[in-house]
Structure formats: C-alpha cells, structure tokens
Image 1 (cartoon, rainbow, N blue to C red):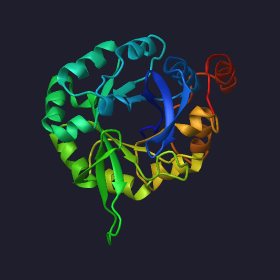
Image 2: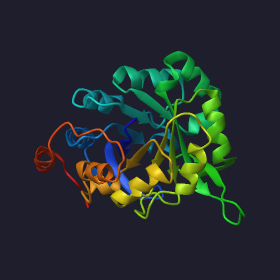
Image 3: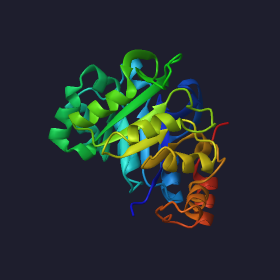
Length: 275
C-alpha cells in the first residue's frame, strides 16, 4: 500500500516564509532554509516552496534559496511561483528542485504543461489549482484563481483539473481559497471531486488545523497527500505527531527519519518562528 505524504508548505515572498488567510494579511514566519532543514529532520515526506509574490509582482522564484535548501534537505522539493517558461522550469530543476509547480502560467498558456512534460517528464510537472467556491450554485462549483489568488478566471476548477492532466500534468496541488489559513479543515468536496476524476496524485491544501483535518482529507477527500503550513510553522502540531495520529487510524505513512526528541531539539536550535 502506498504511503500518504505529509508535506509542509513554505509560502515565500521577499525571500522569507509568510502565512496569511485566503492568501492575504501575510505575516512573517521565518527563514526558508532553516525551516526546510527543520522539517526534513522531523520527517516531512516532501517540501513545497511557493513564491507567492513572484507572479503578481513580476519576479522569478529565487534560485539561490532552492540551491541552499537542496544542499541540506534530501527529500523531494517542489518549487513554484513565477515560472512562465521551459527555461524557468529548467533553472529550478538544475538548482535542486524535483518538481515545478505552475498555476497562472498554465492557465494563460495550457500548452506549457505539455511542453514541460515532454521536456522533463510528467513527474516534474505539478499544476497548482487555487479554487474559490462559486456562491449560489445548486451543486458545488469552484472557480480557478490566478495571480496568487487575486484574479478570478471564470474557469471551473474540476474541469480544469481534468484538462491539466490530459495535457500532461503528473500531479495536482489543489488549494481551497475559502479555507486557506482558517484552520477549520480542508474543502473535502473540492478535493474528492478532483481526486475521483483524475488518475494522478492529488495533494489537498488549505485549511489544516488539527491532525483529524489531515485524516479527513486523505479519507473523505481521497487525497494522496496533505499539505499544511500554519499548524507546522507555529508548532501547533509537529510532523511526527501528525504521523503518529494517522498511523493509529490506519493510514500508511513513512516513519520519520529522526526521533521526535531530536526533531524537537533541532527546532529549538535552528528555527525562528514569528507569531
């Protein structure tokens, strides 16, 4: 049985990790290199870096940070934000990323998904889908958002997920704009609607507040992995605590590479958390 992935997300702007609510009211959360190294020690299965300021502000994701992280972290790294071309993807992969995530560029130029998959393999192409529920619909519908959640597109998210996979995406990162940062649970209907439709892994994002929320995303949401930020950044729960909870409830997870005592001590020494 395939293990389910626990994935810390490091949203970055200006070279720092930040966290907000529904992509707004951002607060500084720490240094990305130290935080990534800490999560690696705690047993994270992957780490996702999203430069959320890159697309709306016209900047590229910072290659230097990826290079520094890849020298200290030896689990898969996914990097997104401001990637607009094959050249941008190549720079991230050469810097040490294992996967590249595209959102705005994929919506603007769907052919980029296919070109990226042809050049680097589908396993390197993650399509990130930021979705907001459309009010007033008899059955749930979600609209795709771009530019860091700032622009609506009128594109229905579930249909776009299927198209992205048909074009070559090897994985989907699905974030609920409505739930992001609220710690009240993932949008299980959104995640399950997409998971049931596509044959590639789906990562649930947006809304984690307790280990049970992650459990529900994996079971009711049918996700292959769960991404979280606030509960890890502010030490509400540790990765090993979440994994212990999931394992006790029958979810297959990879055992942490280091003991929980060592991870906790590393956190005291290395990670700076801003409240």
